[in-house]
Image: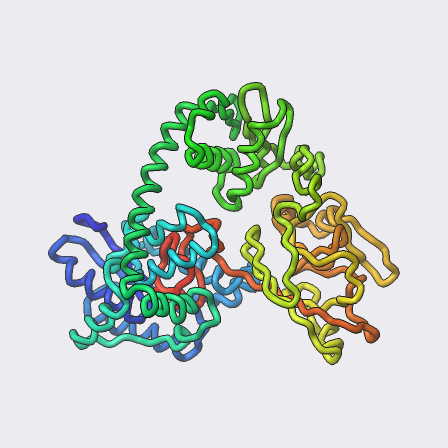
Length: 502
């Protein structure tokens, strides 16, 4: 984790975990020959309490002779301007602060205060979200320059150790709330598992994460070898060919990992590349020559003789073709089942949409809420709609050919594609916009506008309220750094953690 002459930037919020981390590092700095610096981020979300946390951290650092740099960031404003959730905005702000301090203050490592219970919570959360083997790896002890020296300790051991040494810490009362998923796992699920199933649940989950990490590292090495065997880089930027003959000799798990890597390489990013896209490319090996499909990041997969080629096409080419995707008739169209990626809304209830990591909350409202419908801003993430006029059924999905919305009270329609162009929505964003749809009729584009046809009127009988919330770390990017107003320390793959306990 730490080598001689390292400069370790420690994220310290003032909570027990980060204070323990700071004292541990200071106890080791002379023995191991490294320097310690502290980064504290005030998210300006908790008023006086946040200011007191900041002052406390500065006092502790002064007493230990540790340089402390404070970043005061209006996370709420940043979230509003960037259309992020508070959790995502907090993650981005903290990451920026840590990276800035490393760059400007000569930092070589970033230390965060994750502990064994955090790791157990992360594994459970990733399992529930379907992140696969990579998510089972949980929080890695070392990930690039990010290190977690306290990963072997429990929360209780940390607090008891501080108490024995007479070291105080700050307590964030919002940590006790159950508004966020991670807190519900922390307060309800994990304690119940330890009481009712096995008292060593946290330890066993940590051991599982360690084993999964070892397997993941091994599979990455095998994927390196499979790349050499199966993949040819063709004479064009971001153009690859997966050769069928050697590819078919690979184990199924290795085939999928290789395809995932190839799509990411062609796209130039990992974001938005999911198992559904990997399976579509895998299926392409069973199709006739000439078949193709379009993937996130403007990547086109083409079945050729003896191979499948992947290439990132230009924005102009994609625009000219109108965003057409898989030219095969999808299985859903032949069977009558909802197309892949289209999820019927639970009404009333909650629906999770994995494409964007958003949750759609539906409930029936009272007629008295008719006035409220007029007051809701057009670009908000809550809408009241006339449920009586639903023609088919409401679903959450991304755009499809033939989508339209009603733009005025006279019933005039506009193609969704034209609307996006007029609103100057970037091409890549259009592909991943969450839509609430009634067949091909787009009822609502969250954050933009809703169809005039579904507006609540005085004569409306049944009113449906739809509210969109978003949670980062939805399982697609389990190596992302923690986000949220309650986040603890920063860690790729750790999910959300209390914001004030960095």
